[in-house]
Length: 224
Image (tube, rainbow, N blue to C red; front, side, top):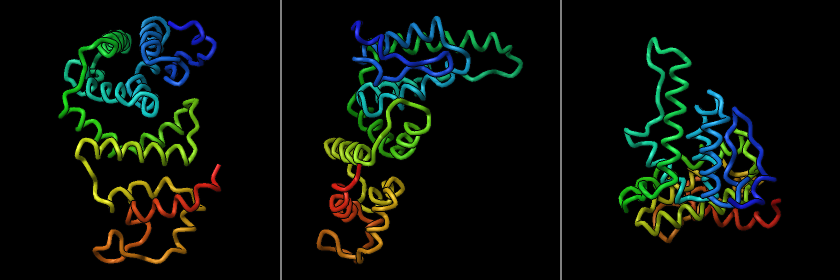
């Protein structure tokens, strides 16, 4: 573990540490294992899977996809408290799950097949807005500017294209609309409908990612 990592750590028993606080994903997983075994509270353990997925979203997409895939494996699904189960017993079972989940994630057992890579890339696209919102709301020490959200979205779309997964222009635009700052939305309202790509009916900015990018690029130089 890199010794310079420790000075950046900020976490509590209820809040797992975040990937951006650590120099490498290897160190991050090692520290999470120590946290889960020795320090994590019941509330913290319940947040672990979601916290890992959100924290890795912009820092390590490959590991984020492995996490999503592993969490869907019946042997590694987040446990649910059973009727009549004592809280202390469930907490022990949850801690045992966390340790095994992190040990497996740290190993080489969860390399994704091409089909699973496609599946997890598509799931990331489907939940992009939710993930970006969670990054903002869960107290992660990563405050994303609009530019960072925009470039992350473009990177994700490029990744989908490289896997022969290209959502419709309409779908891509509508999905990103809610992340536009109000000043860019205001600018879009001044733009007339137009034909995109030389075919089809004229569309508004909201309903075309290609058109939306033109407006964003026009405005982005003025954004913080």
